[in-house]
Image (cartoon, rainbow, N blue to C red; front, top):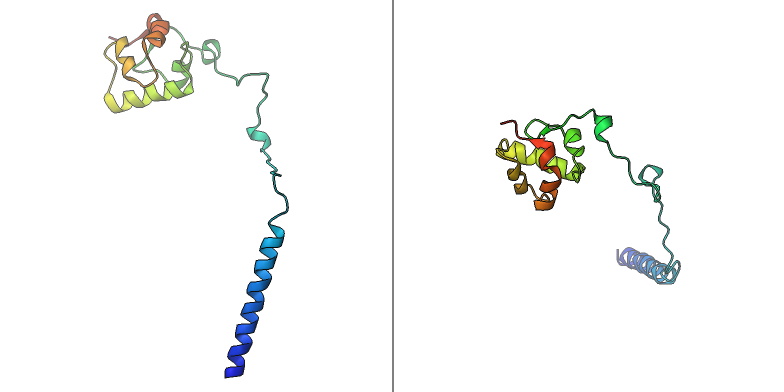
Length: 126
């Protein structure tokens, strides 16, 4: 029984020493070298900006009712991209319809300048 315990101890010690040596001897390799690959579907052309839906492509007529407009219709407004369009939809869902154009300033990211750009192109339906 004593002999078997000693054998197990020696095998475990040998494994530990092998692992430790391998770890420290191998840790000096590949320092400063990092290989990064990006999937082709994630690569963009740096010269050409991402395509957006224009008012003509979305078949949008103005003024746009901000209380019934889809995300694509909202994106046809100047200065309103996908993020702001989604925020408008979310705000409208959580708080109900906008009673005036000025209410859009309650949406994060829409300030006075953005409202001035779109004020003549929107309606609240009332």
